[in-house]
Image (cartoon, rainbow, N blue to C red; front, side, top):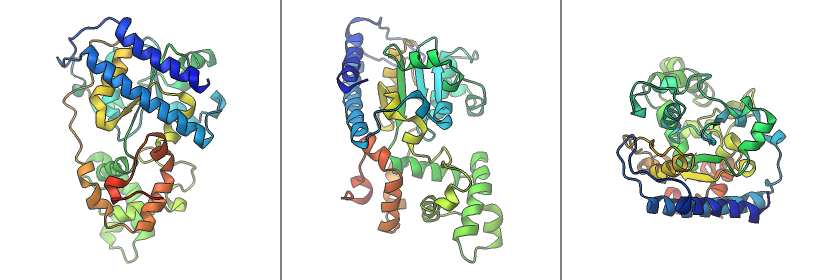
Length: 325
């Protein structure tokens, strides 16, 4: 699909908002979503799509085929054939709540209308959703057509990374204990000379600097595999935006507006992303965690996530106070 055709399809979505789809104010959260707000969100969305497409061309990644999709990518793409919606989930970018919403949309939850009542473990359970790899080749081609809403939610790479660290290595939840016992213990063993027996046993006191050193040491962080753990894998490696050409590119900063647009375009007019979603404090803490790091480590970290910075128009100014040249 060349750029002009791709852009015309994006603009046609904006026309759809103005002319075609029925509009209702009511939804599961009693949130008033106006047509005007959706049109404004779609205008921003089109700008994001055009920017992303330009970056794909600069990166030389616009000429791909279905065969170029990795097993990891196909696994991260959830498909709702009834509503013609594809959602590529990215850990640490509201994916638990979006999976909850999709359970309601696909009628896999019958105990109320509040998505937040769905246990997170259930939303993440194996076999809950149809994935891209479950489709026939003809169905996969249909997903790539103009009738489908293809949705991705992204986040500033360093903010997402810090969120993963705080949730998986700094916390005390069962999930954190799991990661501490595996990743945390490995980090302590390999990167902390003279570590105490308690730290070696539990791995629950890994510093952010140690975590960053782990990520920029591929023989540790990618030992016996080509990919990072999905919680800190590069978004482009999870979702392949240059091939999938997502027509709703949401950002964590505008989560509610972008989620409303995706659901509206999918025809889910009576369902919204839960307003009970708690805002993250991660952004406010970025400087606290990143300021002590050596500039060389930050540069190497940037190089790992550079594709996400470029594709989704993120910078480093509010992290470092300046950009890398």
